Length: 208
Image (cartoon, rainbow, N blue to C red; front, side, top):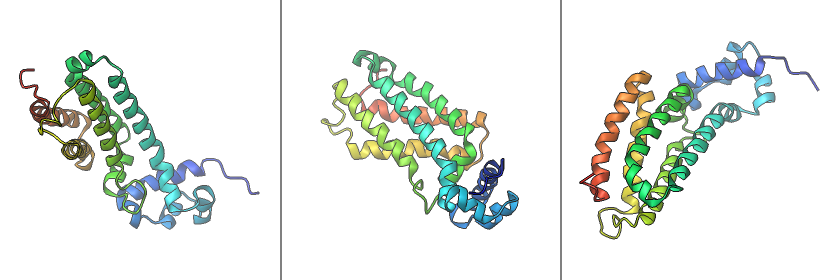
């Protein structure tokens, strides 16, 4: 078995990132990636199996890391007493969303590929995974706090999904538009204020 040359794996990943950012998954060329990494396409196949395997090597750590953090945030809030959840829901959301923006910008190149250039991969609808998690925990919040948003007709699971999807798509738009990290934080805080007005109406919390 031939010994793999040290450093090639890392060079291929870096050159692949540049190629995927520039052209998206479908139009990215393994031949060009190999040329830029000063290696051969066969060496890429040896290390990553194919183009999808190479893309997954870049995307999976970022998406799984974000999902793990996101689940910890949601579960951490869910474990609070119902009275504490009612009291701190909006502040908790604001604080954690600030951290989400930082995670996005710590991995902005990969996430930009996922948002605008991942058609044809298993990540093409990755934001929906986070929407589903958020909606699931929102329903748990409503049940735990005995909020009547759904029985009253002010909301439905379908509406929660649409509203939550719009919110997260808005957050990820920051990297699509190449905002600076500082501008992204400003934009997302404005976005949250807009959505909070709607949530206060849905949850019947206009006096808070």
